[in-house]
Amino acid sequence: MTGSEKRQIHMLRLQGKTYRDIAEGLSLKETTIKSYCSRNHLTDKDIKAKATNHAGCCLQCGGPIKQQTKRKPRRFCSDECRVKWWNDHRFLKQHKNMRMVKCAGCGVAFPVYGKQEKKYCSHECYIRSRFGGGKA
Ligand SMILES: [Zn+2]
Ligand SMILES: [Zn+2]
Image (cartoon, rainbow, N blue to C red; front, side, top):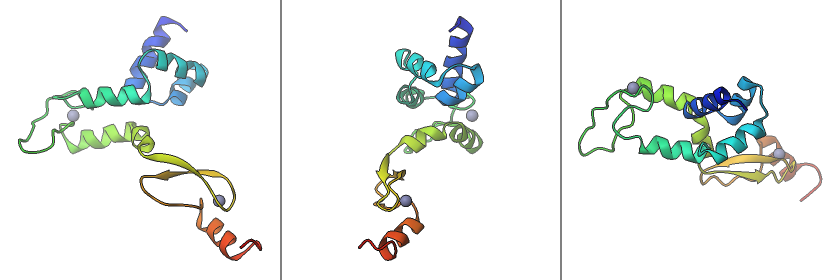
């Protein structure tokens, strides 16, 4: 890995790009990016911590934020910046409270978010195992 590739990885990770995005962009292996990132404090967790510590200026544009007293501290100067940032950092939200559950119908693992109680990956699987296929 060259110095300029390393710099690009840093930059792209801070912009919220996934390991795969970066691997594709730099024509490197995803596992290479991943292990580099875990050695250099650039994992999803690290990025998230950086994001929450970044008080005072807008996470998207770096501009100043007018904090409203008695309210939760704001992280973006405008709704526009907030929407943009979340579009680029969707993966942070997806990882939150996500767990993989094995479908009781087809046996394929599928993601479940938050406190949802789901046994089947789809309505079809639910119907099939409840009413069809001979199994009780
Ligand atoms: Zn902004
Ligand atoms: Zn299923």
